[in-house]
Length: 442
Image (cartoon, rainbow, N blue to C red):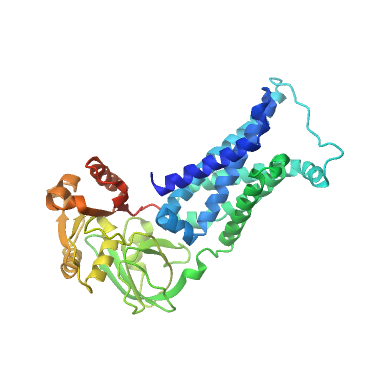
């Protein structure tokens, strides 16, 4: 099982187990409104719990990236948590309101309202007095969070607007934290679930405040200016070389960085296509896949100021198998160009085969890839799908006799990668030996 699946399931199971330990409803006779109260507590705990975890991931903590295998994996988990938070928030809202609506129209008898005994603590009485306010805040925060989460998930919503609006989820989150603290069953604070949720929400608050103040990743930001711009028209790739203005910690081949080329557009993640030579320069190859990237050749000029944030990622070719198989599709060639640039300066004792597929490749770009492969002593297999067919496992194993002893590194479209991975799995290759960069961070 992938680390992100393990982390996701472990978190949900842990929260559920802690709730079950603390929730007395399971030992009582059935009562609808008592069951409703328990389910509302459960859905609320899961909802605010996954949102808190997502807020923590949003600040890009190094230790989480290392455990999950890269920032791209962290963002995939962040997306899953967001979807889960959306589902449980809607469920929580329905359990809270549908019974009220049924009472209003006479389908259910109105239950007696719970009031804390006179001898209750002052804190408990105070929280009970704030229930109406907390419910109102939670309802408006719910509406805002649902709208923002949906906009984050739909692909037609432009990235530049997503970048500007997504951080406002932090405001909704802070309102939901207040809602949760006031309305969480007071008895839970005497169980492990209460302090655990308190710590989780405190960490989430830190993440929300960093997001609102745009401080996420600020220590990794380096100012730079454009040193050189090249455009490969046939395959719609813009190659830009940057001159860094401050200290860069260095990067491993295959890592990526966030580039802010336009403050209105915000930062975009792009793979670094050059190895680190301590000369203060970084190169990026950017495919014109959307409105923003297609306009770059006309917008970028030598001397333009940009911001680089990074490096990030674990797609860094650190496995030490005897041989390696690389598979690239389209602009997925960029991390391999970076590692070939690095290997050109050192001896390469093991066999490496690079299978590269692209239908929109001009001669200039292809020649640069061929030269990089030659200098790094890499066996390049270039495939044009329209004439040669698509790369598959049969083609790879036919061309690489030692494939059973090789690690496989893939970067390209998700469906292409899934096909290659499934093919090797059927041949008995452990999926831990298949390394893939996830294209979609959003």
